[in-house]
Length: 312
Ligand code: MN
Picture 1: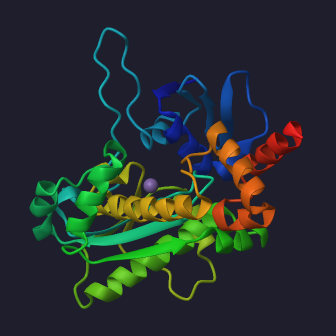
Picture 2: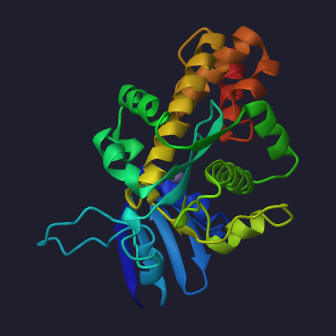
């Protein structure tokens, strides 16, 4: 049986888990993070960062996430997204790009941004330092965001936790919420730039294409003309990189405001430190304050409660 092994970061594995949530298999092997079964490919992600793709279509599936590890005697190239499904010279086209931030953070909202990067703006954006926001510090993000805000058309949507929790409790998955926000932000930008039209629209991929459109079923307007999906979209076109910078900038600002409201610095992510912070918040402001600050369905809510009851 053919197989491919990829080495991924913890964050990337979290993204993969979300991406395959429709196909998640309940059996996780020892040392595993998640397992998923697709037709033609089984995927197992391990805590070590290794992700194993097995089955006849494993190569195709693995390509979405990067380049396989080379034999140890060769230098391992940096994983790069597969661009074979995109038009040629995609990076130099005029593109609407969209990305989101905050979906894996217990505290803070989800921010989604779509931008339009006309090809004439590409050199300027490069000059301003636009690149993958994951490689940038918060101060750099804020400096670059302030510059590009005045250069490129964009739409920013913020889903605060009160609303997020309501929608989530009414049965909406996070994937569906993201799809709705991306579709809406893209629509806003297309309206802003009309009658000009982009050569293409690129969504930083968080779900399989058919699943994305399933999420959008029933929407009045569904943007699908010239829409492409790519994982690691920030490195595929600057429009996604710029979107990720603006989304992160907005997210960081909301986070600072939440810290002010809480009276202490709120941690990012979904690790043990957020459990402690949530417990502190419940003690200071009562549990009714939680829906304003956190994504309630995360396991962290339960863990914060355990911390409080343990201490009493
Ligand atoms: Mn993304």
